[in-house]
Amino acid sequence: MLTKSSLRRSLLGIPGNERGLVSGALDSAADEIFLDLEDSLGPGEKGAARSALIDIVADHDWTDRGLSYRINGTDTRWWYDDVVEVVEAVGGAIDTLIIPKVRDPADVQAVEKLLASVEANTGLPAGAVGLSAQIETAEGMNAVTDIAHASDRLTAIIFGPADYAASIGAAHGATDYPGHYWHYPLSRLSHAAASAGLLAIGGPYTDGDSTGFQQACRYERALGYDGKVVIHPEQVATANERFAPDIAEAQRAKEIVEQYESADADAVAAIDGNVIDREMYRMAARI
Image 1 (cartoon, rainbow, N blue to C red):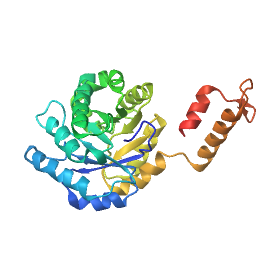
Image 2 (image 1 turned 180 degrees about the vertical axis):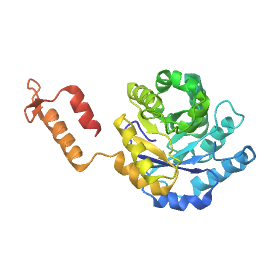
Image 3 (image 1 turned 60 degrees about the vertical axis):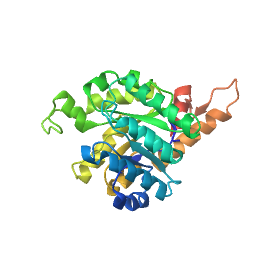
Image 4 (image 1 turned 135 degrees about the vertical axis):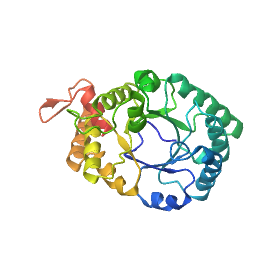
């Protein structure tokens, strides 16, 4: 199971029935691969794709990276079988289940309750499969803080920009907007995730512009994001670089942690004449 502190700089998504894309995904340096049963498939493909996903999971070795899959939303007729059939068949290999279009805590709790029953019936340890909640609607954004605290299984909150834009009636990617177009929802989601100790994951960048993708990663990291959904292996290296500390930052964090943890109980930990308080230590420890 992926945890709230697992490295998830890049989440590479591929359709759940695309066997031909699996080798390229596994050859990439993506921290996590997720197989999609939702937006990348048409209604007539859902059942067959679920079977194909099970075969893909069973036929490959996922030891060295996180493996997730995205179910259909809880307002559809497919999500129940997405949970039951996949977890019954290959749940032992699944780290995280992604819930799309989460509107309120009840969506998370419904999946959690069903998942717990499947784990019990198949002999999986309770809590073996984690959850990530994807926020893609105005309703979900309004409830994002409550959603972030809805379940102990949650490890991350993911932003879905395209569906969110449609939800609020916005022109996706408006070029004449004064400032960063997604600042408000990105910031609100990041704050909610942090309040629950969860990772914040940026949504996919689909414009095919490498410079724009780099800027998106930089903006999101500045707002506290830990990683990003990527749609092509070529985006993985940029995401991994942008959502990781540089060498100097990592070394500084290591020194802060060492100084704080080695200080006597009655002494004040300091580095270069600056007091290391609890929050500075926590930030350094996270890095």
